[in-house]
Image (cartoon, rainbow, N blue to C red; front, side, top):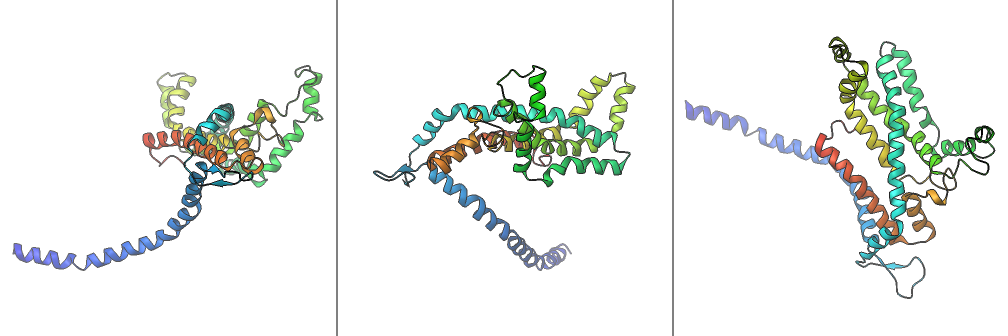
Length: 307
């Protein structure tokens, strides 16, 4: 009977193998468009960027003419030349991320916890959070340039109250650039935190009060740890685009030559100086610097709560 059962099992599983192979082929065919998309629009440009970053100028060639080489000195040159811009970019991005967190957490808590009993108001508040996305990024930044210009009522009031010394400006300063970064990326911070707080089980908060914990202690020991995935995701989603931003720091918008970030340097090297290897090397340095905190977070927490 044992041999009979073994033979019956073999007979039953044998037809299943072609079906499994067929399903595998179907899965590979379904993955093919995505793989081709990544190869065409991510891997090919990335490979071109790496090759460009090692190029060398053509001997006796014109400006913008380069040839394939392995000139690793391009990296040391841009690091020596643009270290202040790199440091400034990450300092501005980190400050804007902290500022966005300070504004976004109370807002997300109000929408996710206090408005939980009012679904209509909660949906309206969420719509208002994402409403700025209905307008172009450039138009929003240009609007703030007008509001913070020397002729605006806001700057006139600061001069009148002697908060801003005569001859001083708001635009073209580190404050205006960080303000622009914070404003433009607040929704990226608010929405992930809201997602965490909206699922917050309020019985944990009530249990903290029943155990005679103060509201502050309950907040820092219960609410914040439970909202940590949203805080980390929001910080990454804010810090990454802010570090590479080149609009807010541009002198055509809220910045000046003294507030240029690494994005402005890359733009100038590509479009003005035609120093393509330097621009490519800076782009890769920025990419690696951003990948480090993302990789650390993914290794520690996985990808489930990243978005």
